[in-house]
Structure formats: C-alpha cells, structure tokens
Length: 554
Image (tube, rainbow, N blue to C red):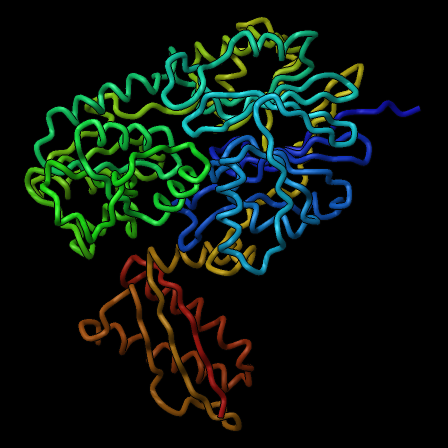
C-alpha cells in the first residue's frame, strides 16, 4: 500500500525576495499560504508586477480549501486580484488589517469575484480538511502579522512568516517567547523560516530605538519635516504622527498608497490620532513651517510618488525649500540604489537638510537576523528545516545556521520554486525536475502576455533602438517602385546620417532587385533584408538596432 505523504509545493518566495506563495497538500486536499507579487527589475522593462505561475494549481483548483494570509505586505497578498478568481475563489483567512488592505486592493479590480473574507486573530484556529491552522503573533514592521502552526496527519509544521524578535516594539505586542515554546511543545516536524535577514550578523534593531532617534530630529527641526517611508510601515507612521502631536505639528498625508493604508488602519484602530492633527494639503499654508509634518511616499525615488512631485515642482501645494528637513525612513530596495542617490542629491541641491538610515538609525528592517534566526531554530528544534523568503544565498546562510543549531544536513530542505517536496513517515524527498513556475508578468491590463521574447525585444529597443525599412515593389515585375523609406528611433539621427542612409537604400534596392531576378517571394526577401542590413549597420556603427523590413506588394 502506498504511504500517505505531505506535499509541499513552492510557487514563489524561494531564491527571490517577494512573490511569496506556498501550497501544502495531503491526499486530494490543499491549502495555500500567501499570494504575493514582486516588483520588476531592470531586465523586465515596462512590467508593473511579477506574480506566481499558477498552472499547477489550475489543474487542481477544486482541491483548494483556503488561502491563509500571514500579513498585509504586497509581497504576500498583492497577487490575489490576478490569481484568486482563476483557481475557484477559495475562502481567505487573515487578520483584520491584512483583510482590510486586501479588500481595498480588490476594489480596484471590479471585474473580479467578491472575496470570501474570514477574520482571524492571534490564537484563532481554523479547520481546513486534514489541516488545522493556528495563528500566533509575530513582530514584523506591519501590525497584525502572524506565524502559523499547521497540524497535519504527519506532524506539526511551523511557518514563521516574516518576523523579528522585538522586545521593545512600538504600537504592537512584544515577542512572546513562552508562547513560541508552547507552539513547539510536542515536537515540530518541519520549520519553514524567513531568510531575508540571514546574511546579517547579530539582531535587528528595535522599533523603540528608531522612535527615540526620530524624536531627536523633531526636537531640533526648525522648519517643515517631510518624512518619506513605505506606506505599509504602519507602526512607523504611528510614531511620526505621535511625535508630530507631541511637538505641536499638524500632519499632511501625501501619496495614494499612504492615504489608503492610513485610512484603513485608522478605521481599524491601528493608527490613533487626536482630533485635528491630520489636515488637508490646501490648509497647510495656514500654519508656520515649524508646525507642519508632511508624511509622504517616495523614499525609493519613485517617479510618481509624492516626494518626487514636490522635488520636481509638480505638486499643487508644496515646493521644497531651505529649512526643510527630509527624513528617508526606509531601507533601499535592491535595484533602486541609483534612484535613491539621485533623490538625495536633488534634495540637497534644493537647500533642504536630509537624514537617512546611513546617517542615523531611523529605519529598522522587519526581518530577523542571525542571532534571532538561531534562537527560533533552537526554540522549535525541528526535525526538518526549510529556509524560505529570500535570495538563494540568504537561504543557504540560513541553512548553515540550522546546522549549527543541530539540524542534520540531510534534513535541511534547500531548494528553488517549482521543486516538489514530499515527506512521509520514513523519508523526505525533493524532486529534481521542477514543474512550470516561470514568473507571470503583469503589464497594464495584460496578464501573462509579456514573455521572454517581448522582454528581449524591449531590452533591444532600449539599448540599440529600431530601424524600419519600408519598400514598395511591383507585384508583377518584382521591381522596386521607389527608393525605400527609413524610420529610425533610438539608433541614429536621420538628418545627420544621410550618407549612411543612402548606402542602406542602395543595399536594400540591390537585395530586392536580385530577389526579383530569382523570383523570390516577399516572405523570402524580408529576412534577407533584415540579416544583411543588420550586419551592414553593425560594421558601420558598432551597434545592432532592431531592423524591421516592411515589404509591400502593389
């Protein structure tokens, strides 16, 4: 008789930061943990978001019992509007803030089905077929984050979610080590643990430290304070509002994401303000500069964010000026280094002061570092260990920490997205051949219609430009009617390249004339023009534009 086994299906979040999505299966039943997106890189021009490939799930969507959300960051919930309706719209389980952000985002997609939202809190227990999911509080940099204790017929799985140990947090409960010990009581079959901070020594900073340093800035500032941070950092936002109230400052909120998240958090009681603290931008001119805080998006140098509109003088109400103090309270997302440096330069050029995390501890990451990760492993003492949520080097570093804490090397599951993991009473196995997990690109209203060929073309266009040749030939005689027209974008400036264009036209006319003599079809002539003109242009310019021949028969 075939042994029953637990199947773990990683669809995202392994070997990358973001796009987190994991499936657990037992028999013909499955649950999903998180459904996140990631943001485009330089090699994905024009792409808005990247979401998990769900071809595996679409074949088995009737088996899905529910989607369990750990917290409200977009790298854990952002793909829901693009995916959930395609896999049967299963019920969703999450904390009040997580569901609030999820529902608000869903409203931007009116054609998608109504979500089946089920609210949970720390201590909640949900029965989903063979799985019992219990939620426990975890500190992160957004409130209402939970780790998961998942009881299966084979044993207990602990999923840490994104976490850190913070023993002096602001606006959220302290890490409860005794509770974690109770979670581990009776033995843990598998620990799946956040790896994002696994390459950093020591422990993460407490939010209390950040709050004290922010207060030092408020004490000294004599002009407007403009703070730019992530819209999801609810605890940091609360600290800035609280400090503004303490130092008699009104708060203006700028940026769509910031306004949306603050509205949700205020309605749910996660952000508290005194009456009259928050004012609209058009009322700011009624107050002296030393009585104003502007809370905005744009710490990553995003072009359309509120801070960038202020810097570029496109904002309706604000211009940066001497005496302003700009606080960039966030880490730099990998790939945004140049944009953030340009942001800093622009702020300084316009005469404002700037304070960022390289100058002062005004940002704490939400992820456990090596000492905290080792402590989590020590508490859980798992039989199997699986590093999740991070680049491969981060997960490999985490795996090494697990070995140091006594986990046997053969019991460490270090793998990539798409590799099915099976565990039964006797052994664990990682499938060598992956199933399809090629990321799906979201571009405008299109989902999945941008693939490798399109991205390659975009990269080519961006690096070398396009060179279009339009030739008209007589259908009967096969002779060219007029000198070919040429359109160039991003390659050469036509008015200053007449000699080169004359040579190109001669070559094209020669290719068509020779093809006519041999009675070649248009289908055969076009690739010949493309190949020969590409080679000719490279020999003359050292560049390879995308050559597009258009041959019209009349």
